[in-house]
Image (cartoon, rainbow, N blue to C red; front, side):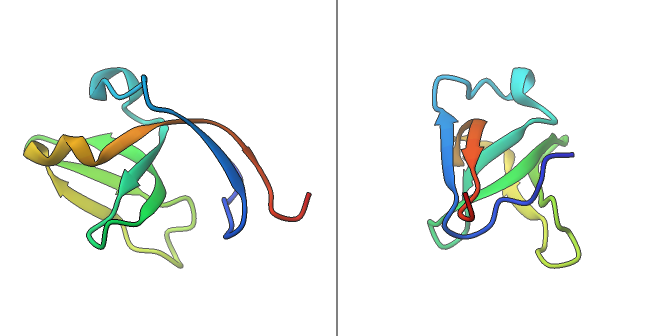
Length: 84
């Protein structure tokens, strides 16, 4: 599992990698229900996309209707901790 991505971290998102089948189970940037960018692990389900947080005890999964796939911003390819 990837380390937690804390507030203030710098995250590199590849917006060209948005093909859902190819990024399934990858760490992905999503627009949440308020329009904010959140980082979750993508899980493709039959009628929805599930964004599973790395620290599931602190954050709830993000559930998005399958017809809202435009809320997937891209695959996370690199990040730098805010503490670095």
